[in-house]
Image (tube, rainbow, N blue to C red; front, side, top):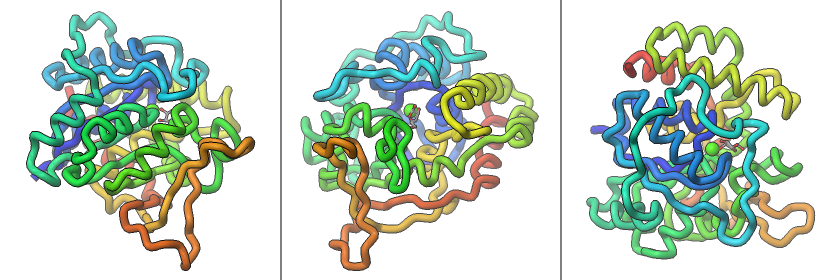
Length: 310
Ligand code: BDR
Ligand code: CA
C-alpha cells in the first residue's frame, strides 16, 4: 500500500524535483502540499507549487499556504540559488489557487482525522509550519508515522560553516521539531551532498522523454549554473529529492540512530544541528540521522517517476 505523505516545501528548484517524485512515485500517495516562506517569499513558493502540480497533471492535489516568516528571525530568501520567481520550464499561467486554511492547522487536522500511524510528514523547507502544527495540536506527535526532513548536517553547513539553510532560516522552529515527541529522520548536507546530478545523470533523466523530464532538465540546468556561482561544487546536490525518496524507499539510504539538538545561542554555531554519535549518548530512537545514499539507485528512482508523469 502507498505511504500517504503531506509534503511541506518552499519550491525552490530542488523542492520542485522532489515534488515530481512525490507525484510520480506509486509508492507515495501525496495527500496535500503545504508551503512555507524560505527559498522564496511564501507567495512565490505557493505559486510555484500550484503551477508545477498543474504542469504535472496533478492540479487536484490541494495546496495550503503556511507561515510567511520564521518564528523569531526575519526571512532571508535565496534568490541566488533559486531565482526570484517562477520555476524554469514551468507554465506560470495556471489558474489554480491555494485552498483556504493555514498549512499548520491543516497538518494538525489531517493527522488527527486519519488513522494513527498512517501519515508521514516530509519537509524540505524551514520547519516553521511543522513547529506550529505540533504546538497547535501536540497529540499529532503520537499519531504521525514519521517526520522526514531535509535540513541540518553534522560535518558542514552551507549558510555558515556549521548551519544549513533550512535550519538557519528558522532555528527556533527546528529546535521545537527535534524536541517534540515524534520520530524525526534528518537528511542533512552529509547525505544530500552525495546526491549530486552530473551531466550524464541529467541526460539519463531527460531521456525519460516526458514533459516532466524535460522540465526537470531545465530546472537542473538553471540550478547547476546558480550552484556553480554559489559554491565550489561542480554538480548541484538535489537536496530535497532525498527526503521524498526516503519516504518512498528508505533502503536507498544508510542511517544511524543518534540524538539531534539545535544550537540556538552560540555566537558562531547558531542553527547547527548537534548530533551525539558517542557510544555513551543517551539512547534516542526517535532521531534517525541519514549518513549515505546510493546515488545511482536514487536517480534511477527519479527517472522512473519522471517516465510515469505526463
Ligand atoms: C536546502 O536549502 C534550500 O535552498 C534547498 O531547497 C534545500 O531545501 C539545502 O540547504
Ligand atoms: Ca527546500
